[in-house]
Length: 240
Image 1: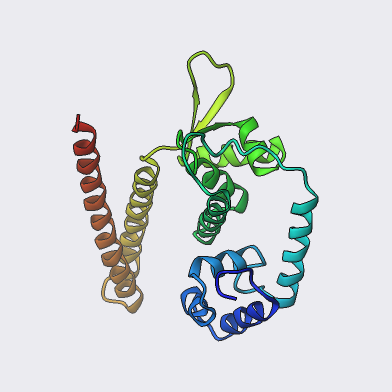
Image 2: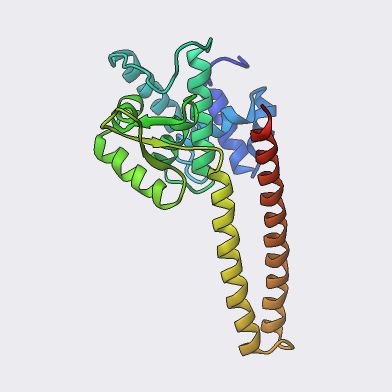
């Protein structure tokens, strides 16, 4: 039924929708489900190109049995003092993880990012991440190193503590956009060199020049967005 767990028949409809080339929103509308439910279902069962209804149904039953058998572990990613429905938080975390994976982030790195995002402090130790994600310390270490290299989190040492914390902040997407702009500029410069080599009046040169024009427009738009966001943050921080 809509709002309950997906049935085998629901998964057949999802597989059929994917085969038709439908998007998650359209498939969800057919089933009376939110697009996030379809996204999470497809992502955790092989992705849109490898999704199989029967295999997904069996895998879901297997995961459910494992959850029943497993001992409950503490949830250090959730802070005390706020009224939150645990299942809703878990569903949101899975949806956010799936979206990050869809955007190109490796799954383990996406899980770490989502785990940090749902904390009010925006910071967790390696031990807390291991407990929260039920993975090995090596997996967390590898993910943290990757994310730090991408500028998506930072290491910090809190006063009076010896353990290292991993943190995210409001600047993460700004840094990501800045990296995109810098890469964009490098590509435009390379394309312009290609135009000179191939000749601006040749078909190849004209194609490259058209691409460079689009990329320049994108870079300019991103620069305007970043400047607007800096002003927004400054105004927000100035409020007493």
